[in-house]
Amino acid sequence: MGLKLDYDDGQTPLDEEEKEGLLIETISNRAELDEFEQQHIEEAVEWTLQRKFKQEKILTEAFVKEVHKRMYGGVWVWAGEFRKTNKNLGVDKLQIAVELKKLLDDTNYWIEHKTFASDEIAIRFKHRIVSIHCFANGNGRHSRLMADIIIEHIFKQPVFTWGATNQLKDSDNRSVYLKGVRKADKGEYDLLVEFARR
Image 1 (tube, rainbow, N blue to C red):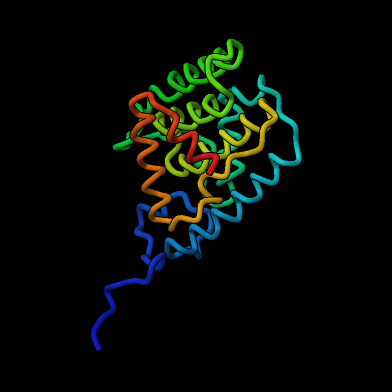
Image 2: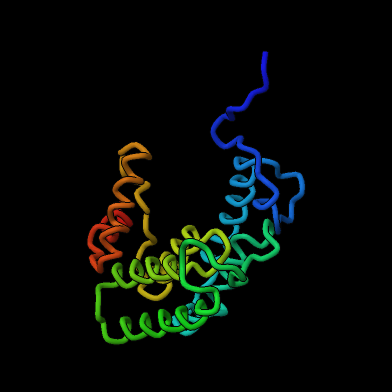
């Protein structure tokens, strides 16, 4: 019997680059990492549910960083800090703070002037913050939690379901989500808003 080169889903070992900055040395594969991250994300969600946040606090760089740190602080050294390297996604590392400030200002404007419906404002925020790609990792999950905080704490509406109520298979759900993201990239948010409320 030869060496096993195929790994069960999630059992792929993490390489040294992927482990850089990990606080828990015993994590050795993607499934373990996902599990530890999920535990901390659930604690961060619980933290948001136990507090009331005002718009003036939510739409700040400090709060954006704090949410990320609460989600990943027990797993990654760099949690809550803007990425220090360029990736194939997102703006240049030196433009992160500038682009985030523009997004925060735009969002305040949209809210004040009722430019879009409340769901669309939260989803526009989510889409843009992902495209900035503020952090080394966790940007998608962070953007969803930020959208939930905006819709719940600023607009007093229920949080998004993010497709969880849909009976489609996960792969179908992901396909619909990605189609919505591609439309949002072109400035059309209807499909992404619809997906968020499925």
